[in-house]
Length: 269
Image 1 (cartoon, helix red, strand yellow):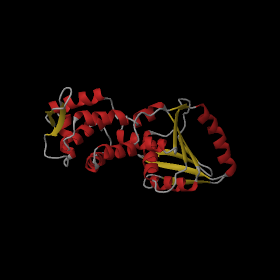
Image 2 (cartoon, helix red, strand yellow; image 1 turned 135 degrees about the vertical axis):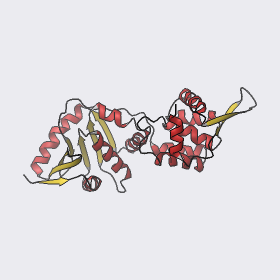
Image 3 (tube, one colour; image 1 turned 30 degrees about the vertical axis):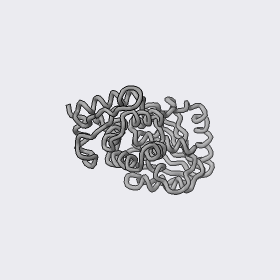
Image 4 (cartoon, rainbow, N blue to C red; image 1 turned 45 degrees about the vertical axis):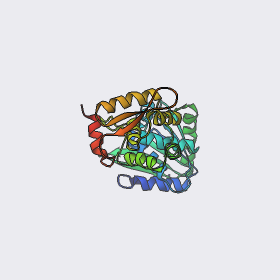
């Protein structure tokens, strides 16, 4: 059986891209959180046609991963494109495996990095595929509630305008994860800050958020009160023909450019 040891510490993304280029289907078995995140980010940024990706992971890994809105919305995009399927199992106690049409790669963390062993032996690959096909069939489908990032972007632009979409994406791109560790700057807070920067009505941004699947109107209302108490936004009443006045969101800082400063103010006691 032919095999090859590879050091993945510096070029794991390149290894994955090569794997994606050469395969029609890739089954990822028992990835660590680090491996799963890298696979999803690489797949989301992949320029060519992706193979069908199947991920069989522990519930804890997937639940932790989708706690980050940025990663979860990218995963949702891949699912929405019928490229990715997620299933969970608690029965696998092995290293991370990548099983494609022509090779098997085992990924092992070593000294803070990633190392792997690949095999292209046809008989061995077929044996591994057969074994894990059964595990995949018995896995439980993982349900993701986060909306696809593309839908968030498109609806922001359609419902409001391109500046609102640009502000939202700028705040996402300035953060590695949302929310981060000890960080209350979540996706709802960002949407409200963007709304305030563009002087949108609370009713409109919260209705958009509920329709797109970001959060409920009640969550938007509670978060608005929270960041208003922090002195980040203010509101003014806007009369309407029938019913109670609507609230227009206003940003207390000059603009959204200093995202780190805004994040500090959101989390300040």
